[in-house]
Length: 467
Ligand code: ATP
Ligand code: MG
Image (cartoon, helix red, strand yellow):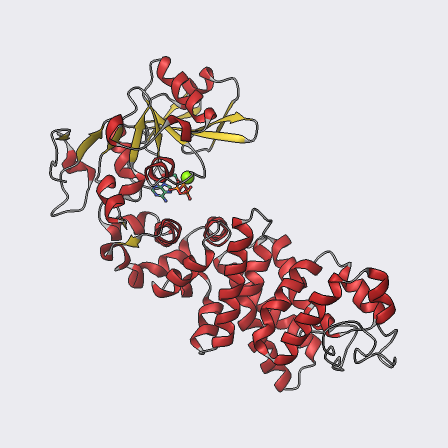
C-alpha cells in the first residue's frame, strides 16, 4: 500500500508478510486519530472497555479488533467485541478473575461478564497456517513458542482488509495496516494477500466473503471471487461441523436471503447444498419462490427478535430434492409412505456429508416434512392433535410456504390460519368427527371458504408422506 497521508509509514520487513505480490508488497500503517473517525466509547460494550483498560493499565497493548471495529466504523451495532493484546493468555488469565482459557493450538482467553464474553487473543504470528509453530518439550509438557507475534503479523493473518483494523484504547485512534478504511469507503471486501493462497489456507474464507458481503451490503472484489470456480471444491475438505456453524451464521442472522442469492451467484451453492443447487438447476421457479420466501420470513423473524431454528432452514433448502425424489419413487410404484421416508433419509444423509447438521435438527427436519400430509386431514381429533404437536408451528409455517405449489395448498394454508384464530371449543364443535361426517367438506365450519376435501391416500403400516 502506498503511503497516503503523513500518518502513514511503511514497515521495514513487509516483504516477508506475503501481501499480494505486485502492487501490494508494502505494508503501510495509517493511524486515524480520534477526531478523524466516528468510533465512540459509548458504542463499545462496558465489558469490552473494562478488559481493554485493565490490560492497558497493566502495561500491555490492547486493541478492539476485527468485526467490531469494522461495524462501529460503519455505524452498525457489533455482534461481539473481540480484543487483541500483547499479553499472553496466561498473563490475561492472571489479570482477570472471570477468565478461562480455551482452545488447544491457539489459546484464547474468554473473559466472562454475565452473559457477555469478551474474547481476548494474543497477537498471532505469521507461521504457516495449520502448523503449530515451534514446539518444545519442557518437563514433558508440550510448550509452543513463536506462535505469538507482533500486531503487524496479527493484522496480515486476518482475512479481509476491513477486518484488520485496531482501535487503540490508549489514545482512541484506529490503526489501519492494510487499507481497510479505504475498502470501507469503497464498500468492497478485499482479501489480505493472494486470494488463492488465502483460500487454500482456509476455504471457509470463501463463505465468509459471501456472508460478510450480504451482511454489510458490500461488493466482493473480483480478485476474491475469481478463484471460487476452481477452489470452491476445497469446501468439501473443510470440517463439516465448522460449515454447519458458518451456515447458521449465514442464514440465521437476518440476511439469509441475500446470502443465499450471493452464494448461488458466486457458484458456491453447489458445494454447500448440492441437492438445492440441483433442484434449482431443474428450473423449478415455484421452489425458488418457496426458498426465497422461507429465507425472507426467517430474516424477518430474526430482525423481530423471534426464535429461529436451523431445522426450518434445512427443511426449506432441501424440500425440492426430497419432493422430487419421493415423487419419482411413487411414480415407479413405491408406496407413498416408504417413498417419502427413504427420500428424506437419503437427502439428509447427502447433505450431512457436506455440512454436519446435528441429529436433533435433522430429526426435526424429517418431522416438519412428515407432518405435511396431516394438514390435509380435517377431522376433529386429528386437527386438535396436530395443533398440539410440538413441531406444529414450524410445520405450519412450512405449509404456508407451499402455497405456491397449488391452489389446494394455498387453500389449506388459509384454512389452518383461520382455524388457529378460533376458540378451541368453537373449532372443535365445527369440525367433523370423522371423514364420513356431515361437515367433512367444511360445511358448518365458520371458516372462509370451504376447506379442501381431504384426499385419501394409501397408507402402509401407519406411515404416510407429504402429498
Ligand atoms: P461477525 O460480525 O459476523 O462476527 P467478524 O468479522 O467479526 O464478523 P468473527 O468470526 O467474529 O467475524 O471473527 C473476528 C475476526 O477474526 C474477523 O474480523 C477477522 O479479523 C478474523 N477472522 C475470523 N475468521 C477468520 C479466518 N477464517 N481467517 C482469517 N481471519 C479470520
Ligand atoms: Mg465478530
